[in-house]
Length: 102
Image (cartoon, rainbow, N blue to C red; front, side, top):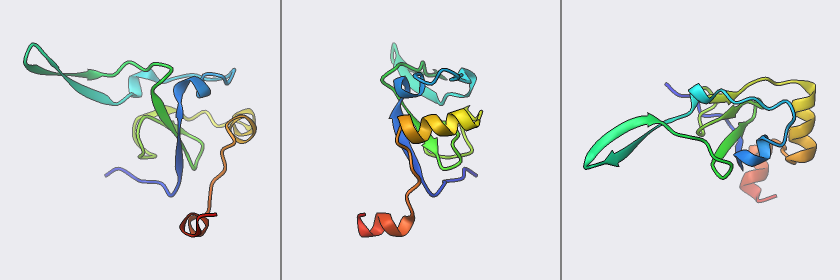
């Protein structure tokens, strides 16, 4: 069963690709279904700069909101943490702050 984390934030892939150490596990992307000539055809989606991925509370990046599925990048280093904090302005908000709107 998929695990939903307490906090994640979506970013366009182009933002993650700004990180000099970025690497994508493209084999982990979500599968998508398309109609081709009236038939449903499944396959892995192709990631473009405008697609969104999710930065999870554990600093892994996923293709979807679940923190344990479709993990595209999980190489969490001090440099990655710095990039997330200062370039992406990622901060894990406390749930009580979200409820209060602060």
